[in-house]
Length: 159
Image 1: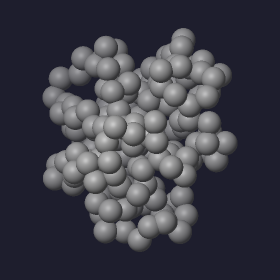
Image 2: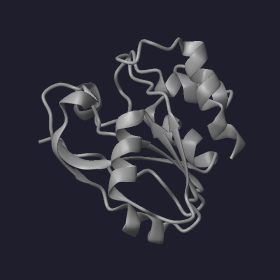
Image 3: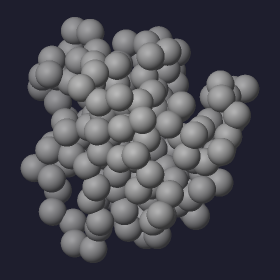
């Protein structure tokens, strides 16, 4: 049963990017968005004028934290063969109530795809949060071009 990674956040974090659950490549690498065709880190580099590819996973996380952005998944664990969100079964959600109490500056959540957004809003009703569903950066989301994804994701820079 896959288990999500710990949240990436610090005391300065004001915004979080919320995914669904790490896929096989990410679980194997023990890194968020490790699949080479997932556009997540390329989008982040583009938006924050960082060199791509990154020199290390720590450099990726540092760029997010420097910009007061954290990273986590809606699901704590699930049953799933492969990496597709559509195959997630028997999922349990992370405890966002506790997380947000421990990170009171977080006021905005950006969702990497519909699965994370739908499951968060089904599971939590937390007042005072700004919620923004964004198109998935997964290679499975081929209906949008990279340029279209960049345009949609620009919202994370303005908050």
